[in-house]
Image 1: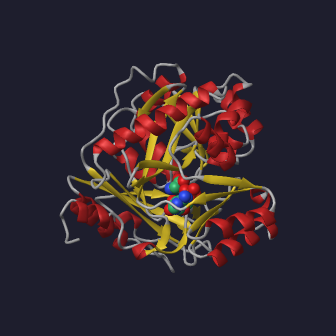
Image 2: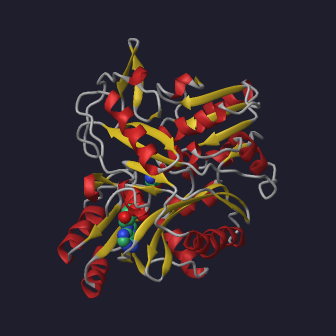
Image 3: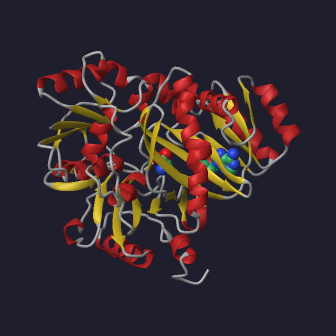
Length: 426
Ligand code: AMP
Ligand code: GLY
């Protein structure tokens, strides 16, 4: 079987790494990929948004399946475009990808089908939005409607912060047309958890839970990022809560999408807040998480190509999906300045010295025989162990082997899990 993966991040490296282990995959391509992906797949110099060039490549090379990683091409309809050429694709069509592409669509769906989430109102004008914020008080959450690279959400601790967020999103248009409308949401408290599932119509096959670390610095300080590290499982959230989230959030969402005429096929990602009254939805994404995928696929024991093929052939309900009991931990090494402006082209050394971890590349490129930084999040150093002490020790030992100028990473990834498991003092 020949598979083409679309994307260039750590998530796509993890997907290619897992597919590369499959005995059925005879040839693996990735467009456009990165330096690390180039070690497990053949890189194709086609951009994610160039749907026609992707279709032409897939037809010319007898590709049996295309797997789409990122949200932008999904929201723009890559699946519909490829299906017109009769190419098999793992990923949601444009009308289903709206669950991530429009927060207003997602919130309205949750309201209509009584899927637990924060109370909210939607606004397309600044003055009424300001009036609502003043009436509700702080803390309060402001969300740009459209895609904003994970940065269109502002958790305002004061009314002044909320007002300035509305100014930035609605008047200054910091996120462009993503700010045409905003969702203003009740602030929820609790532990966050990412729960992803393979979904095909009403069939929902949950993956193992994981937890991301969005703020840039230790102790959850600093600006939000795309994610600075992950771990799986989440020992301090009991299985009964995970089961409740599957029953009250993931399954109802898949059914609602079918009922609305936009049946979902692909990975449905529920970002959850475990509140004192149970799990509630923070957001839905229409794809694998990054860097959740790095830890989740590290624990997958079933052939990923089998799961993808079962899904596109309508057999997802029948396939046996096995997960390792091991703990996994992924530490992101980021460029100096990330999530704000950052330099590119800094030489990365020490990658060859890593032994007990897998280094998933995110923003890297090959230049003159060296591997250099080429993005904000550069590497996702991922390790497995029989417990979090081992997984974490291996991941950080590997991180200490790797150098590039200005590299920064959080030192507290999975510390919460260690405390919960009693491996360090709380
Ligand atoms: P999102 O991009 O929707 O995942 O939001 C980014 C982050 O903002 C989440 O991971 C949460 O930490 C926080 N957040 C979003 N919505 C809420 C909410 N209603 N209450 C509290 N925190 C929230
Ligand atoms: N790690 C967060 C995301 O993929 O959206």
